[in-house]
Length: 345
Ligand SMILES: [Zn+2]
Ligand SMILES: [Zn+2]
Image (cartoon, rainbow, N blue to C red; front, side):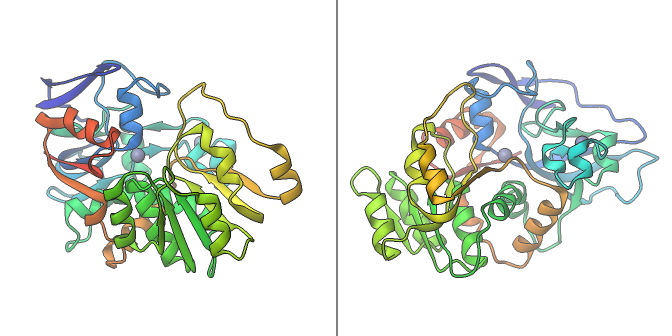
């Protein structure tokens, strides 16, 4: 089969590799559509290394069609259209037992420890099959829509951590696909106004289409002044960082009202540090938290929102890529030229 093999930082090439073999407890999925995540870009650049093998096949946002089912597998049939939930949790560590399976101490993931979706076929290991990591896609949901389920589920997790509530003012830093998912989810959660900060023009335009009430170009305008003006000098209830730029952490915290929440949603480059004024946290009693991956429940909730037609997936996607043009697909996520690159296999 054809696969985009990752061989180290900035080295990925389409290669002919052997089609994965499955045992009686496993499932083989023909990949129909995979999407490029910001994390894939960081892996490609060598900025994220945890769980990443070389050579390996990355890609953890994948949907496809079942083409082989092991004899002992229950509940799946040939030709079932499925989404692949990448995070495989152990179900027995401290975190799994306490409702935090997304940060399982023994977690493995498809696209990391197991080969991922930038290939024609993907083997779903037994632990994943038995843990419910394959989810059937409703008939009227297209593969291009369904591939948004995984990143949207991570954003749902983030919205919960950020505690977005009815009547809130929410600021989203970064207008990439993840930022636009946060805009949509915050509106669904009842946010009164959502403000999005993003230097790239076409992304600000898309954010307005996605439901943002106001967009700010932080290169030419003062986000701080604008947020204070539209909140009667009180500040935002929630700020979500949808880009991993350490130098923006302090200024993001400064946008909050007392008691507000800053969620560090995007991942940062390993080893990069930031400074934050501790008195912002102390006197203003703000909450600073993070978001990592998704739970199985988040995945189901996310697919359900897409199925109900509540998410504009079109606006988040740049289509037309194939495995042959994967480097371009990754580059265009990195440089912000497109939105989420959708690879049709
Ligand atoms: Zn991802
Ligand atoms: Zn665990």
